[in-house]
Length: 212
Image (cartoon, rainbow, N blue to C red; front, side, top):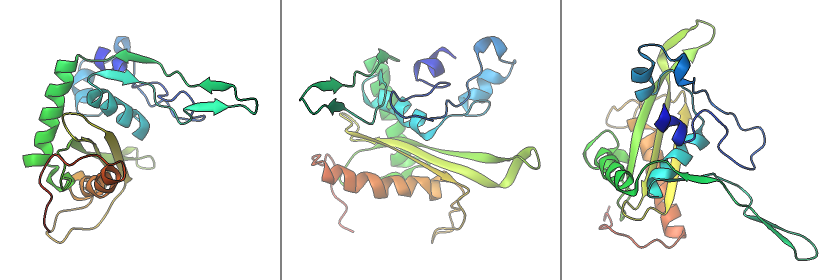
């Protein structure tokens, strides 16, 4: 619970995004015997895409959680400036953040996120596939999912974090991989977004560029 709270779950993440949902992180005093285990795999809590991106940004930022914001500053007609000063705190150590980036890199190199690989850049991230809760049946769906992939690049000095969340994706890839799984939908979407953004920002490649 302490770490989930440190990464900003259970409360609105942004300083200037009206109407943002807070997600749901029950207080540890209200946890059941299996709540800790369930939370570790994403059940029993709910998070927004912005909260996911902000949590991963802390890993990218050497363990420092920084409150996200949309407006950097406001300049009045008389030239006076009101600069946004986001809250920030240390969620984990820099050493732990680096270790996590390297573990998340393995997901793309040899794990479920191989389709998230970005040509020319090292990347780190994680697939997530959750059974969608059917409010009418009051049970988890056997077919519908929420597929997500959150990642960052490059690994050593991340410049971007991208969160892809897809509600009820369907279909199959050419090799038969189901798109309801994050490996077949959210992961390749990450690669399609991250590559052009890194080029647009002028980030120097740190890996060979795929010729195909």
